[in-house]
Amino acid sequence: MPSNWDRVIGQTRIKGILRSAVSGGRVAHAYLLWGNAGVGKDALAIEVARVLLCARGGDEACGTCSSCRKMDSLQHPNLHLIFPLPGSDAKKSAGDDDGQPDTEVVDEIRRQTAEKAKDPYFHIDIPKAKFIRIPSIRDIRKQSSMSGAEQGKRIFVIFDAEAMNDEAANSLLKVLEEPLEGVHFLLVTSRKDAMKQTILSRCQLLQCATLTDKEIAAALMERQRMSEQEAAMVARLANGSYTRAVELISSEITQFRTDVAPFLRSILGASQIKLMEEQEEYLTGNKRDRAEQLLAMILVWFRDAVMLREGGRHHLFNADQEEDLVRFTGRFGTKDLEACMDAAERALELLRRNVYLPLVMLSLIVQLRRILHAK
Ligand SMILES: [Zn+2]
Image (cartoon, rainbow, N blue to C red; front, top):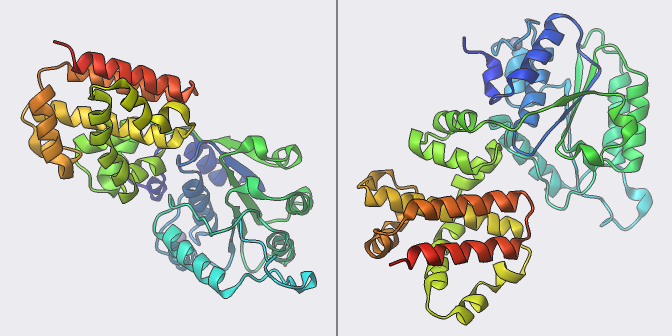
C-alpha cells in the first residue's frame, strides 16, 4: 500500500523502527541518523518530523492537514532546521555578533530550504559554511524551553551534525541532558566518527543502510523519469547513494563523459612515453574523486559500445556522443568489449577499496591496451 513514508527511498528497517516508536508512544527525545552520504538520512529526518507534527497523529503523515501542508514547504513554525552557517568574522567588531546572518546568506538559506522542501535528497550547503554555530544552538535552548503544551511538539533537525564546534556541542548536550516533553531532536550525520561521544550517548542511534541498486533504479525511474535500462546502469555506478546517482546524470558529469574519448585515444596511441605524460594526472596524482568519475564513465562508454555493436542505438547512455562511439565500434567492435567493461568495473571497485590510484589506473590502461590491440 502506498504511504507517505515512500518519499524516503528504501530504508525499510529504519522506517519500521520509527513507525513502531510512534504508534507505541515511545519516540525518543533524540535520534542520530547516520550512514553514508546520499542514502536518505535527511529525508528520513524530515519525514519523522512530518509524522510527529501531523495533526492526525498516526504513524504516518496524513499529507492533508494544515500541519502537513506547512511541512510541504518546510515552513512549519514548530520545525527548526539547523545546519552549518558561515561565521560572521567578516564583521569588524567581535561584540557585534548577534548571530544574525547577512542578507545574502538569508536569501541563500531561503532558496536552499525551498529546494530541500521540493527534494529532501537535496543537500543544504551554504557557501563558506563550516560550523554549526553557537547562536543556532542557543536558539534551540530558548525555543525548546518555551512551554510547548498548547503549541504542540517541537522538532529540531540538525543536518551535518558533526559540524558542531565544541561550544555548540556542549550547549546542545545541556539540552539533551534535560529532555523536555514534546521536544525532539533529529541529528543527521555521515561522519559519526567525528561526533562527540557524549552526544552519541544521549541519542538513539539509527544506522541507515546503503541503498540497493534495485531501490536506486526504481527511484530514478519514478523521480527522474529514466528508462529501466538507463536507471539500472546509473544505479550500478552510484555505489548505494541516491544523491550520487542524481549527480551522475546531472550536467556536472558531462565533462567526464566527454573526457572518455580523448582518454581512450591517448591510451591506445603508439607512444607509451606520450601516454605517461598525457595521463600524468591519474598516474601520479591523487585525485580519487575525479578518477572515480572517469572510471564510471569509461564503464558506461564500453557498455554503450557493446549496445551499439548489438544494434541498440536508441538505448545509448551517451546519446550525445554517438558519433564518437560509432567511430570507436567501427574500429574496435570486433574486440572483447565485455572484457573492457569488466576491467573498468574492477578498477572502480579497487579504487573504492582505497587501492593506490596510480596502480589502479596503470593496470587498467595496460589491460585495455592488451584487449583492444589484440589481433
Ligand atoms: Zn497531517
